[in-house]
View 1 (spheres, rainbow over the protein chains, first blue to last red):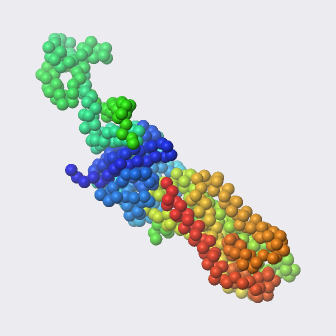
View 2 (cartoon, helix red, strand yellow):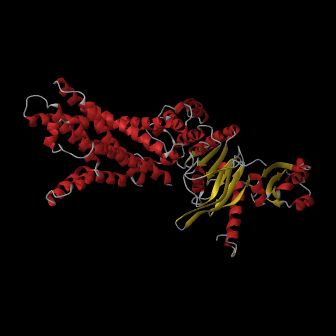
Length: 318
Length: 267
């Protein structure tokens, strides 16, 4: 096990009587991309702002490479982070290039980093247009470029694709994926799950101020225990032996086609089930396998967490 | 150092682009031309006012206009970034709040000095052409710039503390009224009410409470000859120049430091 890059322990934060974070624990390995997921108002932004040093936690600690980070944050410690605030805004009258030159100077980063970064985020063509002429997607990409100034070890992205159209979202994550060989760890907060699936190494689910689950994605899905679903339809003719269908739990599919079936099996049994079906490949017209989605797993885990919380006597809050 | 320069350069650039510099310079030049001509009218001479008269009139102009310009220029410094949503971004950068304040202060000061240069050039050139001394003019510019710094620092303090742009602007205008208009009226009222029986120490103490009074004192002490000083009632002024200068410097440094401290503690 590698030492974590970022380690959060026992983070608490309350605003007045409202406890936003109630003991958040999270660690992120170097170079990994973790999604911080939760509905709006669950404390994602608060958590990111505490990690960035813009908010003081009531208690708990933030450690980067083992070193404790306090509040107000020391300047050389800020340099290790790249931060894209939610709905980032820039100076409308400056061009994209001038904006990055300005921010590079503030970070003590040489100017010649700016042009390659504009390339990375695909803004080279619009570098000399004023930011006020930028689309929302271009502004977010400029936001990503500024976060990358000075090659930070840890990127904090707060709802980076909020308000982008599907193309914009795809583009944004494609850029993030290309960053993965830079060895930068990324923590992305988002309330939209479907869009970040497959692009993450791990996922942390924030609910009522606590991380209810934090694990690599396959593990999360496994923990939810949702079945893999195999759909297939048969050619006209003898079909499959009824005994096999019964044994595998095959049921007539609900889609209305007379010769369509669905088999639900636990993920570990998937290959065994498929190989038994494929003995009769001649009889099968079409087959699709639907893995349990992260979104379904997430909702299930959230419901479970909610149910656990509702159980009397289970409340850990002192 | 690089960050400081970047911050200052951006402030100057912003105000150059949005036309503030040109507007302020025109305003100041217009007023200074009118005042110089009025001074000439009052002196009852043919020709432009002499250096002394011009400096007395321009000192009054500076006392009215420079605090107002300083406050208006600086008031958006922090609260404007907050409203635009750029403050969080800025604060995620490895820049101390002290650097942030100082950078903004220097950039805005450059704006003020530019407008002062434009505004003071006509009276300076005219009086020097008439055989007046040139030395008072750079000194005058320097002192007016210091007054500008003081009010920029005050504006940044208000700006760092205020949550809303409107509130900040309201406080700035109130500060201007208080320090530039009401303070003097109040002081005169106090002297009249006490029939001048106020101890000298109290009067001097009150002096230190207002940077514009301090500025006026330094400016006249340095720039006017003994005769003119007598005429202004400042002949035997007991306040040492160094303490007044120090007080003026503190009027700039303390608000700036407080602003940086305040922003650093804020979440």
